Amino acid sequence: MVCVGIGLKSESVTELKDSLLELEELVLSAGGEVVGSLTQVLPSYNPATLMGSGKVSELAELVRETQASAVAVDHSLSGVQIRNLENELGVRVVDRNQVILDIFAQRAQTYEGKLQVELAQSLDQLPRMVDAWLGSLSRQGGGIGTRGPGETAIEMDRRRVRERVKQIKKQLENVREHRSQHRASRRRNRIPSFALIGYTNTGKSTLLNRLTQSQVLAKDQLFATLDPTTRKVHLPDGPPSVMTDTVGFIRKLPTNLIEAFKATLEESADADILVHVIDLSSPQMTTQVEVVQKLIEEFGWQDKPVIHVYNKVDQAPFEKQFQVKTFPRVFVSALTGEGLDRLKSMMTEAIASLTDNVELYFPKDQEHRIYDLSRETKITKREAGSSGTVLHAAMTPALLSRWKDFLVTEDV
Ligand SMILES: Nc1nc2c(ncn2[C@@H]2O[C@H](COP(=O)(O)OP(=O)(O)OP(=O)(O)O)[C@@H](O)[C@H]2O)c(=O)[nH]1
Ligand SMILES: [Mg+2]
Image (tube, rainbow, N blue to C red):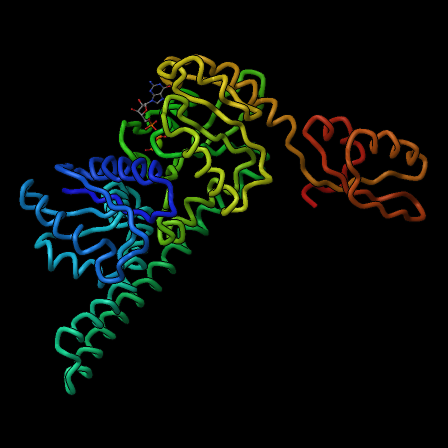
């Protein structure tokens, strides 16, 4: 496979190169081989082929020389662009999203995972089908008589895919319901939950294995993990809790994938505490952290407590630790076990500061104690009655046990 990096003059060249290197890794992770690559920086994209016509000729030559059987472009391509490029190059052309979708298709193990991938692929395919039809129309010169049957055929195809999309969404709904029942029961039993999140290949699964004595697949490839796994974690000084490992993030994450993997992401959305795993040894660390931070905001998780875990200290230059300004953070090696005790105590502390909104009732003769409570936590609602006062307040587990005599209901 030949990889093509492409960007606009207004964008950063380093970003273009880093992103291209990542595409090459994606191709490897998909089981492909990279035999060559080239880049182009343009003032604006060419609607017909994305890159300039000179670049297309150069690419055609490289394909011939290397005898590559396909080309991967580090950008999203329209159906027209793919068809034009394939015509000129004589080999298959895929875009970055398709490479990622291909990896996901290979990795999906569970029924749900497979449905999600099929959904993402169908959503990716739909706009391309219109392009393909418009393309065939222009090839035929758009002559009278060709329009009808062509349109009907493509409309039937599109309808078929749309029907399938509807069907998959329904099937996913069922799986989701089952899953949310599990989570609800964990909530009822007040089991604190952690979600491992982070850029792909940072060591999330390795960390899960370490902390929970599990044997989840951890591998030096992008998107080794696809389906979420939840395991019990034992914290020496803390209550029993659970930890979920899920799919990693990447820059330019296809929106169809985000849409399709909503259920998987919900696992993390529902966690009490996020554990953001960062590869301290990666030259791309800063960009990777930014990508994850942006996605955290996009998913609306910014109000959740986060523990930043800087992993792979064993292979990172020591000075890199001084560049880290984020808090709360901990430096670990999931491989050697270094720093994991510190991480566990941070996890215990994080659980201790989790709050629940609860309702409390103070009878008249105890109302003087409300002042004590107001010094320990924020009272969000207060209603005085003739026999006593009803309050709503955010309470940590420690506060709950201290004030349990006044507790009415939990989870207001
Ligand atoms: N040197 C070193 N390697 C590590 C460490 N933690 C993980 N690795 C390696 O990093 C690679 C990726 O680890 P995974 O645990 O699969 O990473 P992940 O974040 O789950 O990756 P995806 O599931 O693909 O998103 C593997 O080859 C691990 O052996 C560490 O602390 N030090
Ligand atoms: Mg993993």
